[in-house]
Image (cartoon, rainbow, N blue to C red; front, side, top):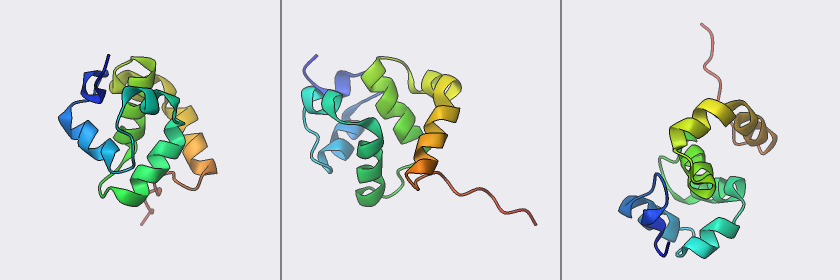
Length: 93
């Protein structure tokens, strides 16, 4: 596999987004920590949300992002919380 767009769940837009944080090859992508990559994307790419971390992990594991969200969501949210990157909880009114 030679292009990022060929990874499961990725396409041309994914390549463009990853290039904004310096990831331009499959080799680079596979070596990066998915949580650090997500943190970098959150800082540089407007609209980066939870689906992004699911897609990153899914592409590295060759699993569809929805499967990652279904089976690993709790662990991912705990890690993001530890990093201060978990989504804000809705306030109760």
